Image (cartoon, rainbow, N blue to C red; front, side):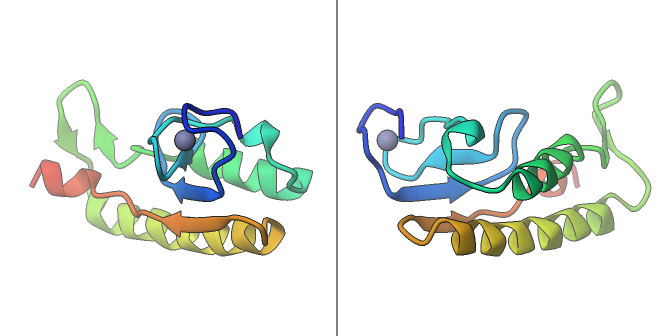
Length: 106
Ligand SMILES: [Zn+2]
């Protein structure tokens, strides 16, 4: 993969406003398109990433109603996706890190 330490096999899977794949060593954001994964999974991860932070009202910097639960659901889905990703990338080590956005606002 294309990052500072090059050829990493350790991937951190964490949602953000970018692709949710990071080098676990140098913490650089990676391009999901560079991974040899199925289009189906790529799309699923893309749809999931778009939902990131939907439980927050960014203008008011407040949690929306049911935010903690929404984030939990989001994290559950992320975990499943990380398992699918690991399945499609057996040569990589995928480490899933869940979102803690809600905890910053409560
Ligand atoms: Zn790296």
